[in-house]
Image (cartoon, rainbow, N blue to C red; front, top):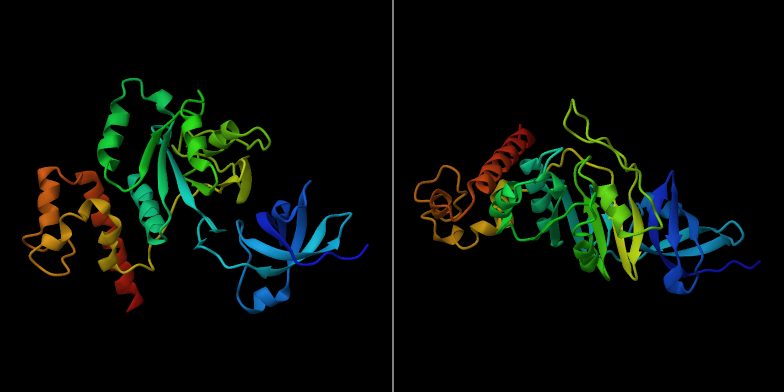
Amino acid sequence: MEQRTGITGRIMRGIAGFYYVDAAESGFFGGLYACKAKGIFRKEGISPLVGDRVIFDVTDEKDMEGNITEILPRKNALVRPAAANVDQGLLVFAFEDPAPNRLLLDRFLVDMMRLDIPVILCFNKNDLDQTGQMEEKLREIYAHCGCELLFVSAQREEGIEQIKARLSGKLTVLAGPSGVGKSSIVNSLQDATRMETGHTSKKLKRGRHTTRRAELIAVGEDAFIMDTPGFSSLFLSEMAKEDLQLYYPEFEPYRDACRFLGCQHINEPDCVVKEAVAAGAIHPKRYETYHMLHEELADAEKNRYR
């Protein structure tokens, strides 16, 4: 059979050097083509990513194999999780079991804002919040963080339709630490792909990793969600500490009113941001993580110049 060339598709997952490409947008339905990337990409230091739109040639129609010949221009590219052409992020933490790690959460928010990727902040396991006090506390902390808040229970399938409505027509990267119920949410959103779910370690109070690779899962017409391996750390070492404040939307109304131009809102006198924290206009928990991340970036900067 004659080879078909110049077919456009999207990488749905990558395993052991093979990239599985969906060519539905080119009119080819019924499965994924297992493609290898041409050596020229390695020479240019480019690696295909899940979410990439690519052009490939079919080398074996029967076994649905091919070669990727071109990676089309990307809208964006994430490092961790490794993904391309992301429209938005769905960041999942749990009410409890495990309790939210606010420093990790805010690292992720900062990183996504740097890439200009909107975030939906989703707190799962609201069935553990019998009194509603945990939801009220989380609403107070993140009310002005610059993203939409959702409170759901994958176990009870409460709030799943809210999530589904926000995924339509978008490629959404799903991220969060292990054990918060990401795979359970994916399972509730669709029936075709059943993700393995895990449990939280009672000893370590954190979840086991159940997702071992990034892949795109169709959750509706032209709607894809990327389930990613759970992460327990995320670092912002490439950012200048002076830029961190730009990614805390709560600071926006106050930061230009400080006494000193270029105020970092740490030790400077007459700092209007710190006054807003003291007055309760900026939540002290958010300022606390800002202070911790600023110190982290300052230390990283010192180490670079040693």
